[in-house]
Amino acid sequence: MTLDALDDLDRRILNQLQHDANLTNQALAERVHASPPTCLRRVRRLTELGIITKQVAILDPSKLGSTLTAIIEVTLDHQSAENLQAFEEIVLHEVAILQCYRVSTGPDFVLIAQVVDMPAYHALVHRALTAAANVRNVRTFFSVHRSKFDTRLALN
Image (cartoon, rainbow, N blue to C red; front, top):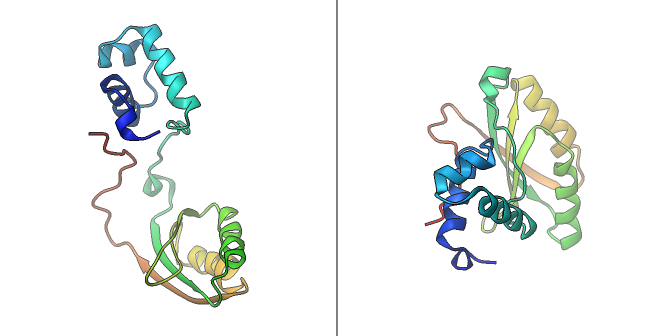
């Protein structure tokens, strides 16, 4: 399904849920100007279609003592499909790695990690990256200030 296949009500529902997924069905219906049964059917359909994949709480890492954000570039020695998949499998099991992107022109992967401090970062790198076979290079940038963080997609 593409964005063009969504009607205006679907978009309004998705925008509201991206802003606050904790809304009751009644509150959602009021905000999107639809009946509660219609809203419930639409949300179920959007979930069944895989457009809504999950509803989560977004936590503030700084309030939980996790103040170091690392943007990590990883280059592999060999980029066969099996090697790329093997690296992704390692990353999937690391809870400190929040995002993993396979990228082109440059490193093979860009990772976003959130850790408590520099020793935790070093432990993560040793455990997941430098100890892994086939990793040629690891280059890390540390965030000194986050001016924007959002999870919402533009649905215009």
